[in-house]
Length: 292
Length: 292
Image 1 (spheres, chains in turn yellow, brown):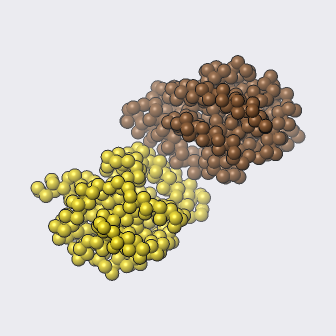
Image 2 (cartoon, chains in turn orange, red):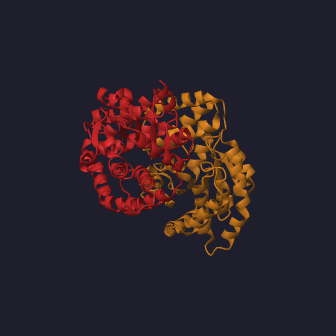
Image 3 (cartoon, chains in turn green, cyan):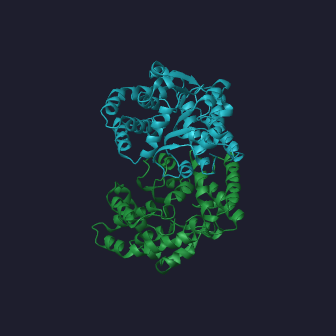
């Protein structure tokens, strides 16, 4: 998915959000913002939005010296989500359609985006979960997802954020875990999950976890390690979580199920849905990939 | 009030909102946005936010050739507000405290900001009015306002937006109209009221109306005509409507009552209130002005 000019106010806002976390020095904040504005003025609209986000957060890292501004937030989110794990697990187990429920909860984890809404109350989280269990979801695609997972031998599950990965765990536990490799980012980038988060949340105890060699908030294949790219090529199914993975992989020829909430107008337009919709969608270009 | 780095995402968003109205040409939209990003990268944070808004909208005008992109919106807003005039007038007349009610409705008109929320339903407008009639308001300042208006001989009422000026009319009708000159912008700027709006809404029939010689969305004295500046100097009281007038006049040494809703965090912080609060506040620097 290409960057749209509508993405630019978001880049600017995200910059401010992040510099506010990374430094208290108003002059440094201002300098970073001015540089980001110049970057945005020259942006290549053929690139995808996470490519710019990666540049911005790299700049914040270099100019503040803070490698992982979201560390405390990520730890907090993991802890909060882990506190909910047992009761969510119970909801999946007692559901008449455990896989569908697990998919819905995985999307709920993406909706909550603890990192972005770090002041969420438990009540709001509960409400989001309740809504996600009731909201429209394409059940045909849930069935296709179940069949594809059952047919596949090697599955990559591309993770998204800290906290959210506890919700992914619920879905992983409904799938054939031995076929699945869970993927985290190689370095801190916003609140995206890294190996440390996978360890803290117990994901490493239940599935194989690797990093993708990249610090983009999505999966920019050219930026990933050769090891990860080989795994990606060899996999016969990809489960890609969150909007960042959709934005970076929507044009890649591969059998991919995207699991996310549409969080902005640009992505919703590209997906052909409304902002806020639960999305489970299969990549459109997989046939071409298989014919190669 | 100085520009804060937090104002910049807003400038970028406003640019997109306006280019979308002014032109359908995506390339022109993109070119304008890139130029605005460069302007923002070099912004003088000592200037006030409306100074940048004026630059941005001047650029949009020059690059699209469209002088008044908000014309249809302004006409629509005037019409909508005029439809409500009679029942609002009745609310003021039947109120136990007509002046306070008129102040509240004038702020409601500022809250509604028809131009920004052009798809508002009548129900939402009604709800905003009901809330504005109940929300906390500094009654001591309402009393001080009443006394100041009564003492003053020459009052300038600096208007804000089209549509909203119908709500201002309710307040004007509670004051000694012969002492008041209502001020509009000299040229189209966003949805700010111009002489045409004052005529359409009947304001010119009840008070003297002049323009300030400027096309800034606020009152930047250095940008105003000598005629307006003389009137401003001679006035013994200023009623300044909306956030743009607050942002441009908060540091001016003059007896000013600011009447507005605090619409963003930057202005709310400067005012010492919360976003969304009804604001009737007297300028802090008037004493100095009188002592000169």
